[in-house]
Amino acid sequence: MDPQDVDLTAPFGPLTLPNPLTTAAGCAGPVRELAKFVPLDALGSVTTRTIMPRPRAGHPTPRAAATPAGLLTALGLPGPGIDAFVEKELPWLAERGARVVVSIAGERIEEFAALAARLGGLPGVVGLELNIGGPSHADLGLVFAANPAISYDLVRAVRRAAPADLPVYAKLAPDVLSITDIAAACVRAGADGLSMINTVPGMDIDPDTLRPSLAAGPGGLSGPAVRPVALRCVHLVHAAMLAGRLPTVPILGMGGITDGRDALAFAAAGAGGVAVGSALLHDPTAPLRILDELRTELASRGLAAFTDAVGLAHRRD
Image (cartoon, rainbow, N blue to C red; front, side, top):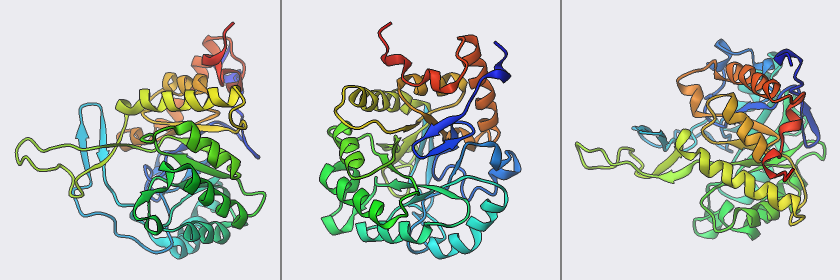
């Protein structure tokens, strides 16, 4: 089979995207840099850095440290805030034909809902990704994504605030007691899809200073080191869907994807879309390369469409 004959169309909830690839939130910065290397309309979608109600400077430097198998970061969600994003960044993205999934976060559930209401109906916006991996100040620092009840309340509030035709995806954290319970709560609350996974908590110690390598101390690990963790989470949640323990919704898989074989593995685990993150930092052309490699991998297995690969790891035949 000629790889160019492979259909990469990716149905993702209410959306049908031309291909399954997007960027992971935050890894392409404000996206302008990525546009120098990749036509933004060539990607299935583009996920923004996380947008919050007010501008944030983020954590002090150093914010990143290389580890043997991944990148440890503690950025602190720096960004321009919703007003500057809507006035400056979003129109620039829309002019270039980008299908924009806006990552949003807040310190309280009400802030998530307000952001969702603000973004509804704006040109270029095709979805919202809820970064629920941060602490809720209203609940004494309890992480939203660690508690099914709070996750439910958050997604429910956003779903009610956002236009009915604007898809809402919940981004899940891996360091929870049961990711399937969190996923089920989000879907029951109205999430149109799930993004999996956020970074894995970690820390690095500088061998010279014997102090934490990051100014913030702990951080989030991304890159190849977390791929097995991410694949397990995607596989668990997709298996729960197949078993009827939660309604079936699309899964966007991410965590250490560096080539087409990685992308195919996430599809086999149950992901209907994939996001490239830390790979962008050393190869900004990675999205186009990975799409080409994915076509080749699918064609070599006689799979005529990307959708034919979704969930293959669960089949018993």
